[in-house]
Structures are given as C-alpha cells and as structure tokens.
Image 1 (cartoon, helix red, strand yellow):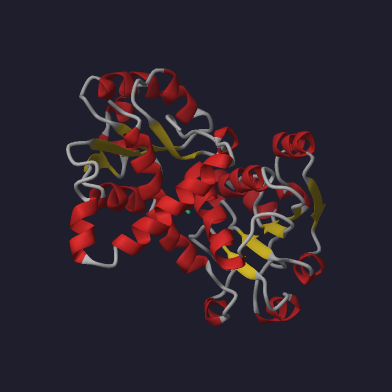
Image 2: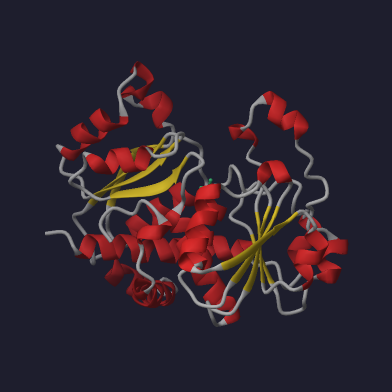
Length: 312
Ligand code: CP
C-alpha cells in the first residue's frame, strides 16, 4: 500500500491486518489517555487534502483520522475553485508542485475518472484516491468490507445485492471488485437497464470466477440477500436527457421492501442518500449505514497509519 488508487490493487491478505488496526483504533479512541498516545504515532507528518468535488464523509473522516494520528492536515474542500485548477493548471502540475512542499500523503477527490492515477504517475508521495469521477472509491470499499465482516462475521459465501445507479456510482464498482477477492460470493446487481454496472467490472468478475447476475426485479433480489448495498442516483453525472429518461421510483427500500428482506440481512449505503432509503427505514435493526460511515473513520486511520509506517 503506497498509492491507494483502486480496490483491485489491494491484496486480500492485507485486509486482516488493516481490520485489526482499525478495531484497535476504535478501542483506543474511547479514552482520552489512549487517544493522546495514538496522537504520537505519526506526529510531524503532513497530509494534504485536495477535494475537487463535494464530500462530507470521505474528507472529514480522512482529516479527522489524520488528526487523531498526530498528522497535520492542510487543504481545501473546493480545490476546483480555490486552487490554480481554476486557472487551468493540470492535476499533474499541481501534484508536482505539492511534492516539493515536503508533504507525506495527499488525499484527493477529483471530478474525472482516472485523475487519481494521473496524479500518482507524477507523485513521490502517496496519493489516496478519495473518489475519481465514475471511477473508483477504494477506501469506501474497504470500510464497506470491514462493516460486512463486523456485522455478519464472514466475507465469503455471501449473497450480496448491489443496487441503484451502478453505471455512475464508483462505490459499487470498487465494492464489487473487493467482494470478488473472496470465495463463493454471489453478486446480484439491481438496476434499470440504463444504469447497469460497467462492462469492465463484469469482465473482472468473470476473470476472478465470481458469480453474478443482473436484474431489475428488486423484490426477487432482496428475498435471498445477506447484504444489501444500496446507492443513490448520481444526478451530478447525468445529462438533462438522462435525468429525464431514468425511472428509479421502484428501487426504494421502504416498509414493503423490508418485509421481503431476510431477518439476518444487513442494509448498507455509502451515503449520502436520496429517496432510495426513506428515513422510516433507519429504525429497522438491519439498517447499518450510519455505523458503516462511522467505521470509515477507523479504517481511514488504519490506512493512513499503514501508509505512514512505510515512509522514511
Ligand atoms: N460515501 C462518500 O463518499 O460520501 P462523501 O461523498 O460525503 O465523501
């Protein structure tokens, strides 16, 4: 783990250590004396936080994770406006310059797919992809996997329903790749035909030997689910014509949908949500999306700590 660019790059043997570290940080975070000790771990390091697209969870949890490890954070939540990108500077030039400022890691969210890879191609310091357009969101997928293990106790032999806007949602793309690293999982993708998961992800699943299916019948999919991973419409990535043509009103996890979901299943969502999960669903014991977001803090502490441990 140097640059974190894609879910695909992470060896599944690394997850055990990462999850243990995250669980340890969760424990130490409960007491102020152990918190102070943890703050000594990476004291003197600096993380740059460059966000070209809005974020609540990824940016704040990476920044808080850094602070909890003693890492100084400098950055902008609107790099598109408040960096020289607004004057036409390329991502490569921005990263080249930031490399000369003695920073130790760069947490980056970009509007376009592939920009994290472009940034990493010119960077001597680790680039952490906090979401690149419709591309990938690897740290989200790691925290999703961590949540599944915490809640269900295993990462194999699961029937995982991934639904919503799979054509534009990067979290679904990253999660599908991580799930495929474990044996005997089946992924059932639920979406309208226009919003199906990309051909590239399906090709990777075939290559990994992971079984998957695609459907627009939400109720059928829910009936056998162990994990339901629901996502919102990514309206910011659609043209006006696309927005008019989509119909997602049948993909709402409301009381009727909850009735067909097995009692032991869990519901995850990367958040933010729109109408696809009504607030009334929050009180269902299977709804785990807020604790999932909370797990993100400790997973991101573990990621930063691991990255920093490799630096001289
Ligand atoms: N899940 C997620 O990436 O949320 P943010 O866009 O708020 O970071």
